[in-house]
Length: 249
Image (cartoon, rainbow, N blue to C red):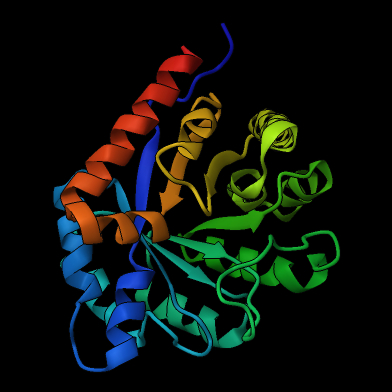
């Protein structure tokens, strides 16, 4: 029997609770409260992206998250000197290095590890030396996976946006691309995560990929919570993930 990761973890991204708060100003809704509720609902960890322009999560949010949640914090960040200083100060469980452009609405693609190898190498090394689990957000591409191994990253997170946005045979092709990339990463000793754009429907086939250890999902869960509450949205995602993982058995 091929390898099947024993437990598919769910990391809940709370960025867009902060987006709603910042649209009006003030303290509500509180993303840290959302993180605590997510943990109570069954999240294995919390993800938060501290962007250069602080458009949603703020420095104070990171301080509070490190002190108030009892699950791993995955800090998404660009590979910049400023963000490295912040990560080394707070020492989150994990740092996921992501590309970042001010004009984008959300993260639009994966890191180019091949072209950015020289720039990324010292960031990966310094964070690893500090005992922080380093993840690289990449497209499910063979060259990117192989370069992640050369960089010494213990984790990659595959960008599932193209899969989620595709239809028909194009979606099947993107799923096959994800399957090849996760199999290669596992073969190279890299832990596999995935995320971006996943909902109750699209998550099922992704969760069936046996090498995946973690999914990081935020925007859909926060949006769905408007209608059913955060606990129900997370539990609904858990159920969909379970259906997918059952297909991998």
